[in-house]
Length: 206
Picture 1 (cartoon, rainbow, N blue to C red):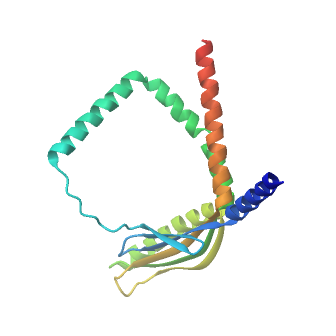
Picture 2 (cartoon, rainbow, N blue to C red):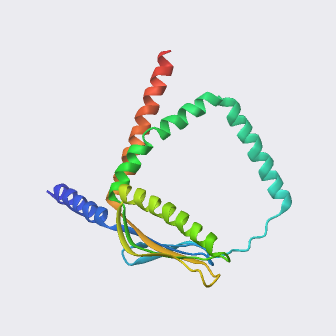
C-alpha cells in the first residue's frame, strides 16, 4: 500500500511540476544590449548580460592547453572518418524539425511591444526605409504568428521627417511549460538513440 501511495504522490508531483511554466522576458533597445530574464515561479535569473569577471591566466598554461586540445582533436578525427561524423550529424538533425514543431505549438509569445521610429537626413530616404522596414517586420511577425501563439500588445512603426533621431525598442515574453519541454527533449533523445542503435546493428551485420 505504501508503494502505491508513493507512486501516486510521484505522479501528482510530476503533473504539477510539468504544469509550471518557464518565462523568458526579452527587452531590446537600439542604444543598449539585449536583456534576457528567466522566470520560474517566483525565482528570477538574469541570463544576459552577465557580470564581467576578471580572471588571470598564464600564457604558458594556455599554450599547453591549446596544444593538448589540438592533439586530441586530431586523434579523434583520425579515429572517426569524416563520413561517419556526417552520418551522425544527419541522424541528429532529421528528427529536429518535428520536435521543434511540437515544442513551438506550446510556446506562447506574450506582451509583444514594438516602438520603431525611422528617421534620416533625407525625407525620400526616410520614406523608402519606412516601407522596407514595414514589409520586413510584418513578414517576420506573420511567420511568428503561424508558428507560435502570439499576443500582440502595442506595435508602432512610424517615420519621422522632422528630426534625425531614429530609435527602436522591443519587448516580449516567451512562455512554455516544463512538461512540454521535457516531453520534447525526451522524445528527441529517444528517436536519436533508436536511430543510432539501428545504425550500429547494420554495421555489425555487414
